[in-house]
Image 1 (cartoon, one colour):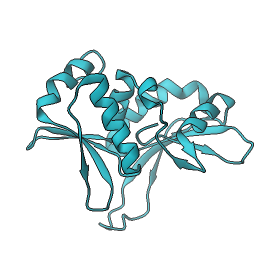
Image 2 (cartoon, rainbow, N blue to C red):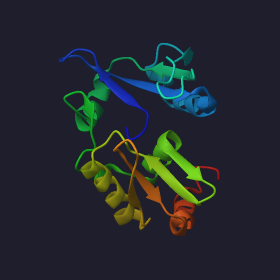
Image 3 (cartoon, rainbow, N blue to C red):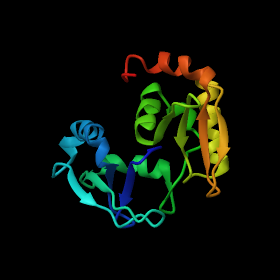
Length: 177
């Protein structure tokens, strides 16, 4: 739930569905996610074009799929949403695993070759929530993360060069590098 995954509750007393969306360049990753969730889905992933980007005017091709609305997803929604807005639950450290980290990196992470850092995009969360996430990464795995303010008044988590060997060690059996 930390990345691009969204949960949607169509009515106040209805069940929740999960919506997966990635840029088409990440088709292989989205196909992997679909394989994990296909028993909860009616249809295979679909390709769609988004409206032109407000900043660049470019039209980006996306690949998406969604699950059925099911009671098994209600707890996830109740944990990660407040009044329809995605939040970070206060007990995130208890829930967070190496697998959580790997999927979050695939969804919202990037590697800067020139600076040898990993950036986790967290602009949709408050400073307090981003601080909670950074502290979780630091407390669990000693990643020496810090928070960087972006130009649009958001915040990103940076995993510095000195922590990349720790990160690689954590993820070596899960993700190829």
